[in-house]
Image 1 (cartoon, rainbow, N blue to C red):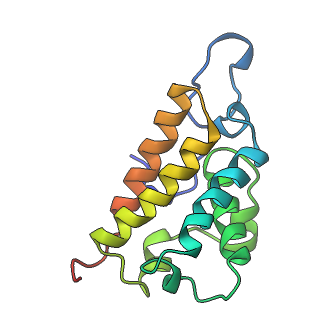
Image 2: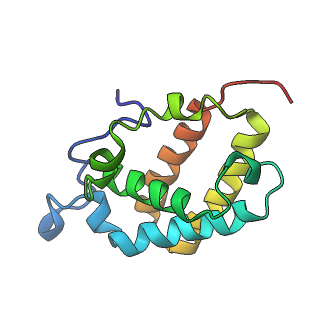
Image 3: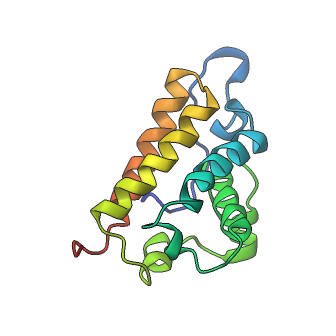
Length: 145
């Protein structure tokens, strides 16, 4: 089983026929899709009193860039994340932050808005959402309020 933050090779083929062999990244629209997902997500985070303090940079631009690169690489797009930052090590990178169930749920709330904004086919939406939920749950590192 692959861990939520581990880079993956070929994603499962979700289509038969002419799209056989295409990555999930390509099937859902590539770079523009992931930019829209991440931009919509960070629009919510920008005004969230629980999550916004977890982003130390005044400008959320660098965080947007990192998340976009990570998601693109995970889903079969360019390997820019690893080239720039190394292995994702998501749990390790989130240790400095208090990720409790409330923070997880707020993160999922804003990510849900991003997924909904994409208007993906149901199979792609379900695949993406399943991963995001698993990743969010795996990053909980405290149950303190």
